[in-house]
Structures are given as C-alpha cells and as structure tokens.
Length: 372
Ligand SMILES: Cc1ncc(COP(=O)(O)O)c(C=O)c1O
Image (cartoon, rainbow, N blue to C red; front, side, top):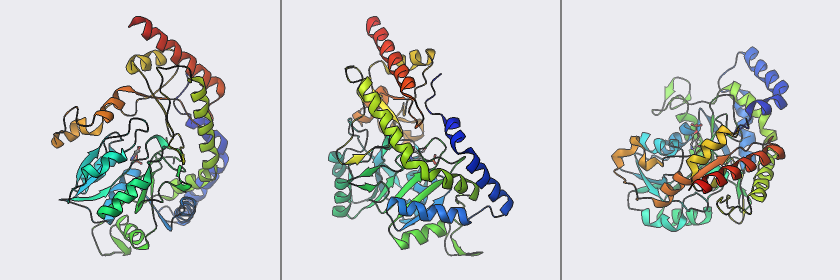
C-alpha cells in the first residue's frame, strides 16, 4: 500500500534526537511555557521574517485568538473561502462574527481576488485568505483591498508553512498569520499545536495574554482569555524538526514536478497550477479529474491511498445550514469539491512509488473511460 503520507518513515530519521529532547523535557519538570517554546517562537519569527511569533495549542485556536486579538465579534463580517477545512470558518463563528464566503479561483483553489471586493460590506472587518494545499494566495490584491476598505488580514497558513509569495514567507503579509502543527502538516508536532505570527508588538502582547487566561502576571487577569498554550514537549519535537523543513519542502516540490511530468500527456488529469512569483510547498498534490469517486475506490483496491480534501464545501455542511447558502451559490468551490483528488506526497516518497501511483491512476482512468 502506498500511503498518502508516511510519518513513521520521517520519525525514523530524527528519532534519536526527538527522544533525547522529549526525555530532557520530561526530566526537567518544566512542561508549560519554558525554553523550548521560547526557542521555537524566536526561530519561527525569524524564519517567517516577522517581528513576533506566539505558540498556541492548535491552528484552530490560532485563528480564534487572532480574531479575538483584533476585537472581531458579534455584528462583524469576516470574508474567507468555503473550500477549506472547517476550522477556518469555525473560528469566525466562535467569536460570534458572520462568515462571508468568496468563491475560489478554479485554477489555484484559493480565494478569487476578482470576486473579493463584491463581498465587502460596511460590516466587513477582516479577510482570511487560506493558502490551501501549500499554495500561496495572490496576496498583493488582498492587501490592496484591505488597505482600501480598512480591513484586517489574517492569513490561514495551516497548510503553507515555508511557502513564499514574491520572495516573502506566508504569514508575513497580513496583520496576523496562523499556523497549525497538526501531525500531518509539513511541520507537524507529535500532537496538536499552533503558532501565530505578527509584525505588531501590540497584537503579539495581546495574544500572549489571551492564550494564558487573559493574564500577563500570574493570577492578575486583565481580560477574559483562555488556556491555549503550546506545550514544552510539542515545542521540543518541533525544534528538532524545524531545521529540516526547507529540505522536506524542496523534496515535496521535486515530487510534485515529477508527478506533473508523469501526467503531462493525460488530458483528463488537471495537475496543480503554481502562480508566478510563488513557491508552493505542496502540503497536498491535488489533481482535478473526472469520475473522482470511482478513481479513489479503484486506487484503494490497487494499493494506492488518495484523499479528498474536501468533499463538501463549508457552506453546504450541515453545521452551516443556518447561513442558508444553497447549492449553486459558490459554483467553483462546489465543483472543486466534486473533482479534486489528493495523491500521496511526502518528502520521502520514491520515484518508483510515484510511478506506481501514476500507473494505477492512468489504468483506473482508462477503466472508467471504457465503462462510460
Ligand atoms: C486550512 C486549515 N485551517 C485551519 C486548520 C486547523 O488547524 P488545527 O488542526 O491545528 O486546529 C487546518 C488543519 O487541519 C487547516 O488545514
């Protein structure tokens, strides 16, 4: 079976160092907000080219806390895409604001900047562009619109750690960048974790307080916060993995280009498009194809795991029935949900494994074409 991702193989490369660092934390007796979190925050801020980075408990919390730190709440509207993991939208709902969806560009699966201004109303307070699958959003028009209408920008970088646009890392364009260290991410912890980046000392200090019960001084609380800290064990694991990130991302890119080569003569397989001036980190290698569900099943029967990110756009999820957005309201997002298929991609994937994926997919495609 070719897995969609092979975390055990990655672990084998760094096992010794990870175990050493985790054991050090265990014997230190210092499990919350210690030197590992400090080190990761400093290195992460430097890496992203921002002033500050603050560790939190998950990517979902990162977005939730970002919205809180910008005082976004009931009566406000926040623009994002519906073709994303639900967490982006949940965070908006959690602060009591209304999510407003802009359709995606079918070529990049990211927010369609041409549609953005149409969704801005006097209630709009922020835009959350999602760098889906590791492909940076075309940020210049987003930042321009935000300036023109005086809106905040919170980048959802859960899938884009290390990706860059016009030579700058994602997470450095908006007022705030939000990252996830969920284990399957390009930089994954051994559990949940997240990071917030910002160039504003004011916002960073507010987030430091919000993540720790609204408190800078122990048992003195200046506002209602929550418990959302990145813990020392997760930070220790991430400190070991972080120096490998650029190499791992390069390997993902090489693997993506190899798939592009393998599929270049197959017109039924639409391979991912990269925008000019961007460096995508291929959190996913996602194709668009016909008869997607049948292909998924045939691949599985033949030892190739693929995944569908995401089969239902958020506006059509039961949890968001209250928004009363019907099928047809975001046609490109709905179409993508029907056609996308993510193929195995991870830094250690071999060219033979990729050839097998491509062979099985092309065979499956011929099978469904003959039947139809
Ligand atoms: C686009 C996107 N946003 C937000 C999140 C939330 O991150 P987490 O799972 O760390 O809460 C994820 C991760 O799954 C994601 O893919």
